[in-house]
Image (cartoon, rainbow, N blue to C red; front, side, top):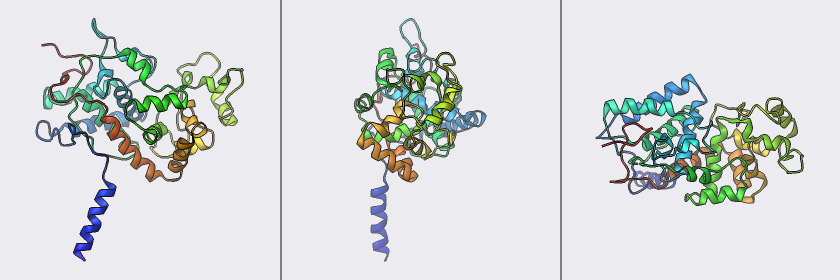
Length: 327
């Protein structure tokens, strides 16, 4: 009996094991050099999300927008200087990405505990995981050991981050260039189960998506009418709307259910169901099974966090996440 139970346990561990970690990144990286690092991140994130529920989605998005440009290296956090043009100025980020003050607060607290030890890139990865958990989503062990870049890429930010009006093939290609497949694409799109989007990101769906002045009929028309009341043809660009109008602050699979009902807010959400057979099947699968969705989301987040990390002697450990160190 003991033997058979051991066999069952081994097989259970094999089939439930998370995605393999990068050779250079591992969850215990700071266990000796800064054992309170994860506790500090979790504490500051919890305070920020308690103050403003939207912050969970904002911090999750920071990690995503960072990793898709030059890898997960905290290049997004750098402000402009005489030699650096900040990625914050790019089209996907300008007047959109937020949460930098929370990252600053985390970094300041960690620097007091263990100076020049924990990278801003790792803080972003941990904050994204903690935000997901606080919104009711899955947890995962975050592989750590990233270092921070000493430069940014405005062009990379403009070109590599998927946009709300991109075609499905363009989005698939942008994910593929980062080593992420279609399963990762659909699962990570599920992060839109929380957070808000600006009117300017989906206005074309309400009025002239087809190019002939007609509304986008892949959007449920009574839902579209509700959106038009606060998202006019002109003006109101920064008016905010929940990406998941059913449970906007809860991490669940309602996002996928909404898409099936033609109530995906962004074009990039809806086309997962209307423009691709494989993505449509995945949307249906996750809509029917929340556990499958959250499990895959955790695996895909680990995979995304492994995009081209700087390790070893690469990059640096910034003292201030907004600027490179000066020696």
